Image (cartoon, rainbow, N blue to C red; front, side):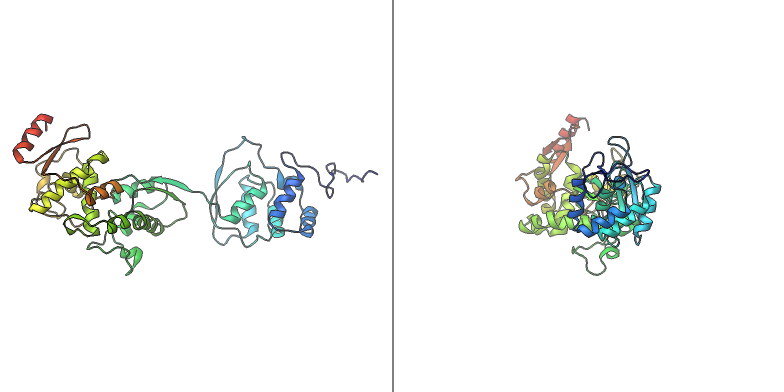
Length: 363
């Protein structure tokens, strides 16, 4: 016996009178609903009020549309979110979105944030993303040897921070941690402690949260290495990171980290100034490919030509290789080195040898 047809309705299907959806079976729809834990009564309610095609058929066919960034402001209701999704062309019906959320019991569980959504997603997929908080993420690579200003530039280019706000916080850890600073050091700056790594961040994160994430990575990866290995000359954690940042700045290849570290440690041991060009570059307003003699006269505790010992703090974020180079330096009697121009260096013991090496490499 044939079922009566409702004028204007699609041909009925075998399950509760529902039409089969293109690209997705009714069984798949039922499985999705069951996965959300709703019963037959809920299913009947949903079927009674929602056209099944609106739920299972995306707005655009596969490969026919690009994903867009969709923002859910904090405190948004399911009704407000549905209206904005429909206006953005991501769903067919705001009313059906709202009803589906009500039946699924998710009215109060949709999370704020930025999402990467596509018209190729069906309504249930979008709802699931909003419920689970699958927000848009940004992959950011912070290389070894970059300083706070460069880190701020990288994050700013990705649209993740206000550059000036980020620097204000990173230069004074009390503005991030208050009195509960996680690292004991004689300077307020977090230079050297925003660990170089690959980070998965979200645009909704604040500058404070990003800084905390990067410092936490330092405490997780680098701090244990420093604490587990006695440092030469009794250097403490801050001094190790400071020297490692100089080694990082001087060396292009990781294999030279222990050798360059040995040069600076030999100089510290004998009371010689480090005379490291990167420490002078750090305080100059404009970075130069080669320092001028006038630059070496700049009056700053970071000028290791004028002041003996280590500078007050790191000049960049060193990686693990540079840190390990300081903790386990090569055994040498070198006190000088000069760059060859290919990323490697000539190491020498005396000043006269150093002068000859400079002539050989054309410096």
